[in-house]
Length: 273
Image 1 (spheres, helix red, strand yellow):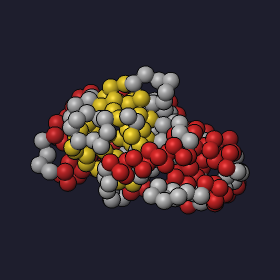
Image 2 (spheres, helix red, strand yellow):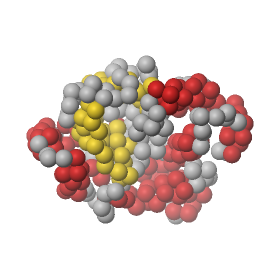
Image 3 (tube, one colour):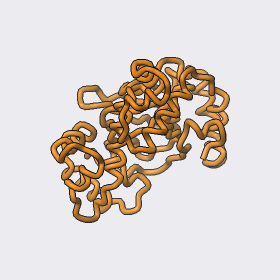
Image 4 (cartoon, one colour):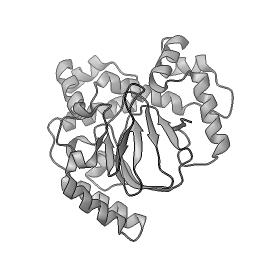
């Protein structure tokens, strides 16, 4: 867990090394963002079916997505990274987050070539993972800057998260004492999406994590418990977020469990092969 004030922006820092479970993994949209400092061979990201696959050598920043991303990992892979809260990357970026929505960028584009080369050198020569994560945390603390509107967005996002997305957006702006337009604008600048879209993502993520792929799934009960109008609406959301039907999604989850039981990635990424 990062120390304050980073703990209000970051869920965790991580170190990843070894053979990926699959050459390509699909990541459905989640209420989170990602920074990767790559220390191995380049990896590849395809941000949607209508976008070309791009290669990332130094690493990348992925703000909260609205579509499923496909990651192609080298064999072996080695990197350190940050799992941000949806608003987390904003204080470290030189541009409004909305410009990066579903458009991953290299770390070099964000922090500059020389600074990133120095950071990667220091990380690569660190003695062990704990030292690497300490170095990355120090770099984030050094780059942290004051960000207008962050308090409003963070508070409202936390309300959305606590309700698992089941909130009326108009109530949020009223409680915050701002107009719906102002709130939406701040969210686009600092999260990349509107409060309504963030709420949809939280609700979908909570629903998916409630699925037990090892047993039978009562889709009607699951959809109703998550607040979807009906099972058809739930199915539409599922396809919009994952590109899969609910039943196909469970089949793919079961494949992961069967082929890689107990793997750290099990639960959200899906085999793309």
